[in-house]
Image (tube, rainbow, N blue to C red; front, side, top):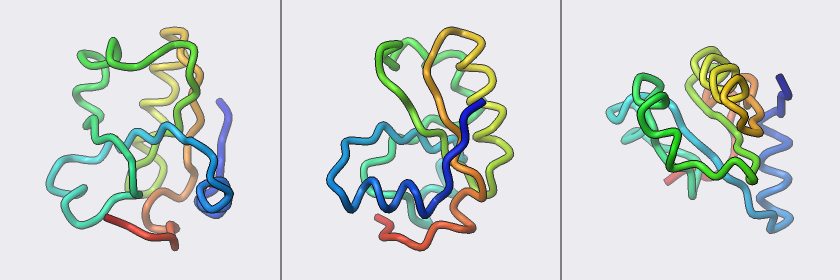
Length: 98
């Protein structure tokens, strides 16, 4: 599975790159702040909402520390999606939140 650091994600965003960020934390966790533009799909719903994702796009999976997003990335990769896990999760995110 491909991995990307929070600092790399922030750098890409600052360069104006279009990123597909999927935050797999629970809704109440996301209310405390998420990366701007990230879409919240809680880990438990990934299996049921994966059809909302385009297999021709690449997605960066985000959670609190990198564990749940890693599981989501492994699952989606096994289903034919192009995904990366943001290691360290929101605990290591230093960029803007919304």
